[in-house]
Length: 387
Image (cartoon, rainbow, N blue to C red):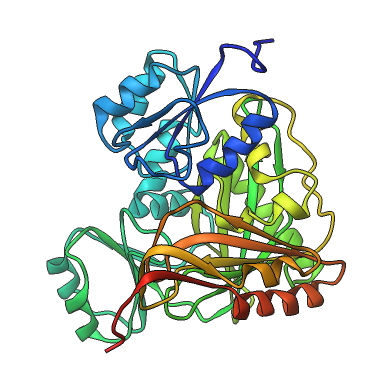
């Protein structure tokens, strides 16, 4: 077996944001050497790893040169240069998740076609290459518009209520989806290692912020019956096997008002919906990702206790150097664990951290989570006009 611990083995990570920072906490436990590439010299990972490289992970040569320096290459963000990853794989570098998986997930058109080909339930859709094509189509409004690339954290997604809403859209390739009457939004983090072993974390429920269209609360276990939970977990396993990925796959589901289950989107990396696992499960999603890409046995994913996760985002109408107000108060509450990502500058709705609340009672955890949300403030040194 290859020596991974306290050795010259090197794990490369494309992206130095908060997901990379939390992954590094696992590599440090096992004394695994890491190298991180990120375009920002003040990225959250910059002060943690001894081998931090400032560079563009979307640039072919930068990614290729970085990849040649490591034994295994992984990502904390999927928007990286795919051609470089394909070439690195051809030359023997182990890239997980694989280039073909990232290639497909980067493009929502390819992703939706993948679901259609493999009969994975997803909202009915049609793809378009530009706004000219959109204007020629007659839609049964409302519909959901998604840019084919670079959409995340609520960006690149809009609900179109009428034809006039088309004017404000970017002129980019896109997908138009049928509008689903949402009953619940659910997610599953599933891991698959190199040998094909699969394990999933418990199904979580998600509540979204009405303005930012990003997750505000994650709660686990999800408020669903055993029959639906089994259906969600079975579909997640089927999707994982179909993708054939190595590493984590975060799968977001929509349960509509009719009781039908649809796959919304996937992300082949650690994900916001899995942060609860650090405090609330027997293993975290970050440990599980590391185990998967190094082909170790996957760890236990069972819950220790119910939990709620609250995203800490920059308050509207503030920018500049970040300030966290009322942290001392929430630190005095039992079962409350804040995670601060290390981003020095804030702006409206930027993800700056999260707080996990663990309690034997999910309802009590939810109550405490609302108190956390109403107590802590993430503001900047500059207040903007709200006019």
